[in-house]
Length: 79
Image 1 (tube, rainbow, N blue to C red):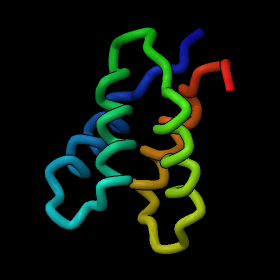
Image 2 (image 1 turned 90 degrees about the vertical axis):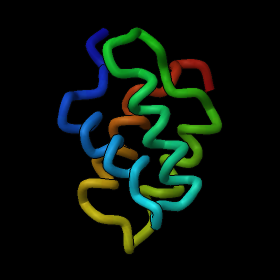
Image 3 (image 1 turned 180 degrees about the vertical axis):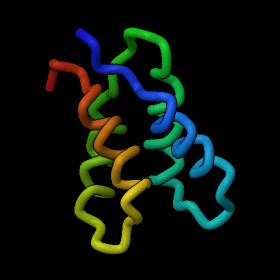
């Protein structure tokens, strides 16, 4: 299984973590992406749920949407 965060996604996640205007939900998803970089860890149910909510936000930037999508693609098979 090769579902891992890319360098670009990790870079965008780091930008979100440093953004003082990012919401707690955005930062949670970004932290999940960063935590999984270079590991076999998977997104938990809560982080996947937050990522799903972010994906439906019409005001979310394309870069932030990519981070949320990355987190969703790495969710655990257990649901």
